[in-house]
Image (cartoon, rainbow, N blue to C red):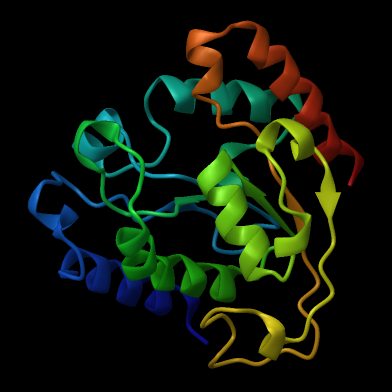
Length: 207
């Protein structure tokens, strides 16, 4: 598989996507960026104002905090992959709507399939709930305040995953760790949260 070609295909599909009305209000879609061979993948909720202006994920205030968190555990941003549940910014940064998530997640699922990371880190509640459900962990979903920084290791067959993941390239077992974190944006209005995030990120050094 030509990974570069696969990602170019995803980019073209997102740019021409008309599955929901967000394409009408976006400036640029935020497809995702980073290493295509990343062992760690971060998944946020949706683009913010700065991301919409530039097309780059986590480039605003929350992105600066994410950079600091990665640096605190000696991980280079260019060595991970960063994406969002939604590729387009919801107006006024409102919460993603169910139909928008359903329309957009096939792009993210394809990115996960291609990269095949060892660790997926949902950032915030929406990403946490979506990814835990997709990897067969629905019965273990709790509030982000209860499971942030905890490691989950789903052992499911490709057929068990409730999504289009792995349709083209079936794997007997998808070995991946799911570690949810608070969204870095929480530290922009509560400085104490940054220390909690730093403590949680230490788990990435251990594993």
